[in-house]
Every structure is written in C-alpha cells, then in structure tokens.
Image (cartoon, rainbow, N blue to C red; front, side, top):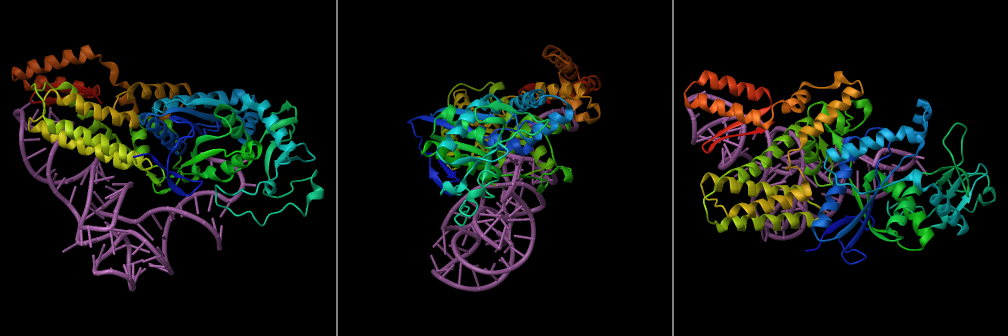
Length: 494
RNA sequence: GGCGCGGUACCCAAGUGGUAAGGGAGAGGUCUGCAAAACCUUUAUACGUGAGUUCGAUUCUCACCCGCGCCUCCA
C-alpha cells in the first residue's frame, strides 16, 4: 500500500507519488532564531522528522532541506536592544536549536540560512519586477502584486477574487497597490541591519527566503513542503505566489502541516504561564525521550494536549518499551524457535507500516508495538520464547525505533548538558532536584555498581538482610534501579 | 463574520455503518526474606445534546451546545 498523506493544497488525503522515481525532495520551514525554541516548534519539527524517517524507511532517497530564519523584525529589534550584530545575536539561538534538535533525536536536515542568500533574494525580486509581478515603492521597498497572480489563495482556500489593483494604479510608486500585497524587500530604516544589493539597500521580507532557498536546493518543483499550520497563510501562500510567478511551474506538490498543540488544555502563551522551551522541561527533570514520545503520540494533524501528566505517562511508556528490549537482550533463552513469535513480529511490522502509510497514524503504530510487547511478555512468562525468536522480535522493535527513536537510553548525557548550560547561564534556581538526581546518577561507574551488587548478593545469600538493604539503598540513592528476577539480579540507570 | 478542526472511560488518545485500539493511572495477581522493579490480568451497555437516514450509527445528514485554529509576519 502506498503512503497516503493529507495535502493542504487539495484538502484531501492523497496517494503520495514523488516526481522523480524513488527520489524525494522536501523542504520544511525551520525556526526563526530570536529565542529558544518551544515545544510547539518542536512538535512540528518532530512531525516532519517522522515523515522524513518514514519516507526513508519506505525506500525513498530523501533530500530534506530546512531553513533557519536568521533575520527578521524581532531579531533586528533584539539585536539592536542588545547592541550586537544580527549574526552575533542569532549565533547563540542557532546553536541552541541544533542542541535541542539533537536532544530530541531529530535527524539533521540540510540547513540553509536566510542571511547567506541575500544576493539570490535580490536577483529573485528583480526578476519578479521584470515579469510584472512585483513593484517598488517610493521608499525603496518591494511588494508582490497579488492581483497579477489569480491563483492567490489556493492553498489557504481564501477568495481574493474581489481584489483588483485598478483603482490605485496611478499611485504605484508611492504605496502598496493593494492592502494584501506583501513585502518582498523592506527599505532600510535608521539603525537597522541592511544589505546593499542590486535592487537597493534593505533587508528581505519574510517569505522570499523560503522561495529562494527551496528552489535553489531542490529546483522549481519539488515534492513536499512542510511547516506548522499557522504558516499556511500568509507564509506558504506567499511562497507559492512568488515561486510560481517566477518559474511558471508548480512549486511544491504536497503541503504538509502540523497542527498546533495545547498546553494543559489551553493555547500556549507566555501570559498564561504555559509556555515551555525544551530546556524548561529538562530543567524540571523531564527526559528528552519523554518529550519526544509525548510529541509523537498524537497524529500530527490532531490537536495534541501537552500536559505534565502526559509527560510522566510518556516516561512510563518509554520505560516499558526499553524494559522489553532489555528483557529480550539480557535473558538466556532455550534453543529453538516458537513460530508464533516470528509471526507476531511480522504482523506487528505490517500493522505498523500500514498505520504510518495512513497519513502517519503514529497512535496506531504505537498501539501495534505495545500489543507485540504485551503478547511477547506473556510468552516470556509462560516460557514460550526461544533463542531464535529474539532476532525476529528485536527486528520489529528496531523497525519501530527507526521512526520513533526512543529506545536508546541516552537521556542522561543530554540532561547533563542542560544542567551545565543552566549553570553557565546563571539559572541555578531553575534546576529542579529531579534533574540534579537524574543527571547526577553516573557518579557510580558500571564496575562500581557491579561491585556493590555483588556485595549485596553475597549479603543476601548469607541472609544478612540489614547489610544487603543498606547496599540496596545506596544504589537506589545513586539512581540505580535494582531488579531481582528469578534469573538473577539486573540493574539499570534511572 | 469567512474558512477549517475537534468533543470517545479517572487522564491522554486511536478507530469503525454491525456494536469500542493503545498508553498512563487505579484495582487484583505472579515473583520476593521484606520490598522495589518487572511482568500478567482487569477497568466505557458506551463515543457532547437533539432529531433524521438505515435492518442497524459512536461512525452518514441536519440543528444546537461547548472547545480550538487561521484570517499579514506565532510552529
């Protein structure tokens, strides 16, 4: 079954076919680096990450480009406020974006930056002027003439038919022809960052960068264009207008938009106090894997309610999956094979694939793997798992993790990094005891843990329970989870 | 006002014209020196309200109530 995706352009779920065989070219709108990214930003980035991973798992060779908007009004305002250049101001937040993305296991796209494409933007605008799609105003700004592009509104399903530019055509050089015409280029203002270009001094409008960079990287027509739902209008609508006006060809074929999330049932906003960056959550002691999991739990087109209960619940879910893998890889099984296990693994993989084929139904894909975990665990308990079953089950699990990427227990170093960052930023008061505990539990090396465990076992065997309980308490205090099973003692880090 | 989305158990949340996935939490159990951890089992006569279509609706249609998004720079 082919991948089916909701296409904002058609308003329908469509079969996905790439333009060029098994090659897929996709572009996603990335962050504006004026601040640390929040969980809403990362919901979108993770949704696109899942799409990227699933396309590759489905056999496509994917070129995935994402822009970084490193110049805009807020950046200019804030850098002026801080008395630094635009580049100096954004460097820190670009770095933070890369770190946070890595912490959430977002696979890196090809990154392109607006400030590195100023010349191309000027050329692009000059070409639009030549073709009559853009005009210059008296102050030296450039606007796109919407009335020249009849399909304007096709993505956002807005009707601009009533808008003409006839009445004010004679004031062309003084003002915008039409209130809806949007800025391609903004004339410089005193004290603001500005670039000298062939079309005059100034700085780019917001939309032009994505047209220029996507077409430069992927060609005038490409397969997929992604972003948050708020970008449908005006940003993506304007990108289509500019790009198609210039090339005369269809710009992106499939438009993929992730829905906004809610935080504790309300729209995220600074005034409500429910506005969180990834770092805020880690500082509160939440693992990056919990955040990633929570953000993948609800299919990307549905509203996701991000709550702290949900975050705890996500942590438990990830634990359950990791425990399963741990059990699979740390147990000695009797030789042989139980055909039911291979079949279970195959069924799970099939169900997972058809779930993701169905417009990335992550909830259903996760349900499939949890069903497998439960059934396999039951088989474990009944001693019905054999040695040859392990690779089958592991392979299904790995296939799942190629998309969701939460099984590897790499939370601790990431949390340590946030801890170090918070100290460097002078935010000690924001560091929760939970983070201290989780980030600090590597105080004991593996050897030391094994040593203590051996001592504990010796004490237990000698029925010196007071002594063994003391050792156990020490280990727990160091963030080590000790499991006594009928096969012996196992441990892992919290 | 225009366009669009959603209301499913204690919480989160899939899904289907034929009688409700999954996760968390709770309860019970297995294991254990006791615990913990882990695992298993279990938890919706019911899917916002009312009406209609249908042999049959949570699933389709209409109305209403509630929540949410976009409508010029917020992912």
